[in-house]
Picture (cartoon, rainbow over the protein chains, first blue to last red):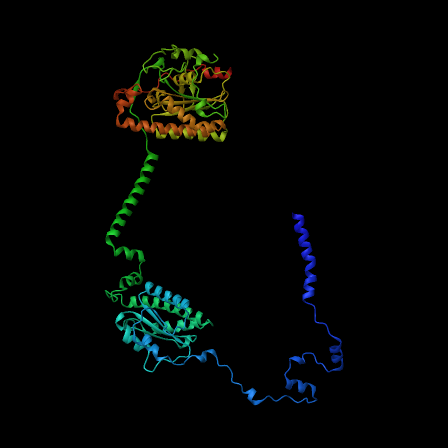
Length: 349
Length: 222
């Protein structure tokens, strides 16, 4: 069987170049074409030329060809970007500026694909769960201009002012440098302006390091999320004397802001647990010391037996305690098998 | 309690073995009727290296520090024809005058370990005071623990294991005796000694007089 396979493979390998050579054979010249070529009537490649070029080729005119103005002025294809409207269609106004958003990513023009939308929406939702500052992301196209009188601050005033700590970004897909950011009143009053400005500046800087619009939006949102997390710390530090952070985040802020380990602060908030842990720690420490003390005492202990007197067993004055006798002659037998219990009168005397 | 000759059980007050009639005098017929001078550690067989002898002595001193009334003696011999290791141990602990053991540690409070390196046997004998705490079973258990080292002829290590096991057994007995001394002592055939007699509890007549020949010398000469 193996031999047959070898023969088959040999035949295939030997026959392959022949078949390959047949398929790739060059077209042969016929006699007429060869004569036309030698006489100059046939120029190789001329069949690909247009009539004007052929006329010029076979004429003696060496002057440069003047293109037909109508041909030269053919309209150029516009960039794909220009196909988009530079203003936001009024039918999207309601979703952008009037209704309160149902999610953290607002993209009524569907600039992102469904998958990309879910991806970004998921990230913003994660951010909302992880930090106290909600982050709303409004998406516009690169060249789109906002409608007159519509600003990020107006949107915040109308939609988010009463919500507590909120950051709203107007992001222009493919043009992160045009992005705008606004903060709710709570944040404006709690954080220094330079800290607020830093959020947008650093996010744009991060986004511009990427060339792809999708990578840009990803970098932008991630950096903005990080900056908002730090902003949350700043706000907590500034408002540490307050008892609430609109009922949302002050307990968390307390944990972060104080200059003590987070675990201890958490334990202080649960006195019962702290108390039981303290008692447990004391008991454990006492047990360890007790164990060590006992171990040390055992090592140093002196064993004094009660004084006793016995009879003269077998006529012996001092000792009649006959203990065990063991043989260690055999390395294979266990100790129990080498117990010497044979009476001496059976041994050699 | 067992007879050193016939290894049969005997009553703790028997003046002679009811099975074979063995007494101390029978042992003296075999090994001599005179006391013998002995150190608590004797390597008559010469199996221990010089550097092993000092640790062996320290091992015995450590035991004595922990048990201020007791002592352990180790005799390693190379006997040509020792008839009975049990009888020899029985006889030796009754006739030995330990020159390096304090007088307040009488032979009644001693544990003697005898090793016969020729026959490759080891036996333990103990005094009357230790009968409530030690037994043939517990001493055999201690010997079994030392057995692997004995097989390798590592006598220092073997004796270390043996003494350590004996210490454990004695500690157990001490705890029991602390709770109920009378029953523990009576189980070992002992009665509490009156306080007035304690001061007289010194070994007398256990030191050999000058010119006496020892049975050990005779045995080794043989």
